[in-house]
Image (cartoon, rainbow, N blue to C red; front, side, top):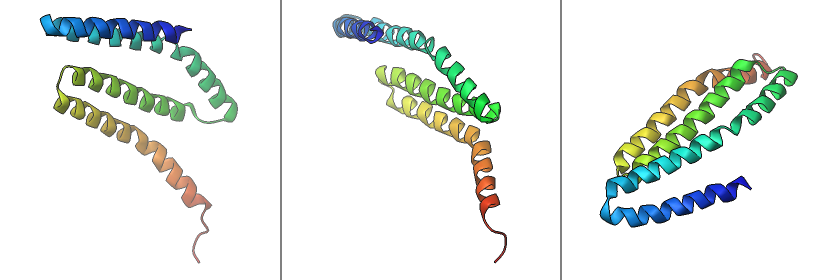
Length: 131
């Protein structure tokens, strides 16, 4: 029941942040940021098993590994951009948070172009040539 530990840590940290925010706002922000980072790093360690299963599935299905790696990079960018923007938002910087999210979306689009190209080429290959 790891989720109970994570939620418990989050609740304790949230209570401490509320208490610290009145006296020491900078410490409150640092506590919130480090708690978020700790939870993020803890959960990232669990992803290794998922990656191994996905690689095995891709190998068995014959999908080139470049596509799996690209999709995993896209997922990673989405998670990291969301995490970073939430921390910046906690610091009260909504404008910077939206810029982080925008940058994440652009980077995802750049990585997705080769996959979109293959999909379009496949669809065009299925269409009858000339009528």
